Image (cartoon, rainbow, N blue to C red; front, side, top):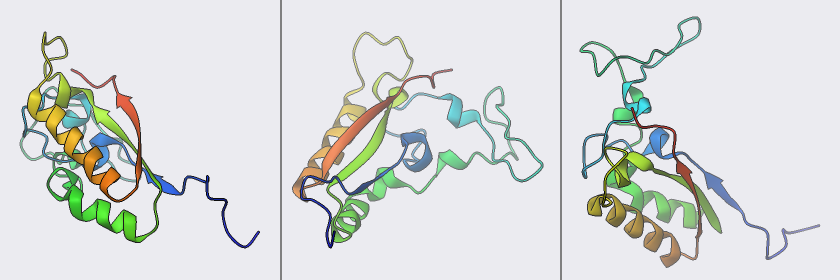
Length: 134
C-alpha cells in the first residue's frame, strides 16, 4: 500500500485537562486535575485540598491551548490531519457540576474550537471528561 485509504482518519488525540490551561478563565470550575500536583520518578502526584502555594499544578497552564487553539489547529491541518480527538472539560460547561444552565463562555470556547477544526476539514471526535468535579 503506497498511501492510506481516503476514508482513513489520520489525526491526533488530547485530553482537555492536559492541554487547555486557563484553569480559572471563561467561567471554568475547579476539577480534580486542577488540584493535582506534578510528579516525577519516585515522587507520586498528589491531589491536594485546594491549591497550595509552592506546589506546582501543571494543568493550570498546560500548553495554553485555550488561548492558542487557532494556531495549533492550523498546524494540525498543515500535518494533514483529518480528525482531532479531544475531550470537553465538564467543569468548563457546568462549573459547579450541578448548574441548572450551562456556562455560555465554555460552550462558546468549544463551539469556536470545533468551527476552527471544520474550517480546515478536520473532523472533531469528542469525548467528555466527566469524572473531574471536586
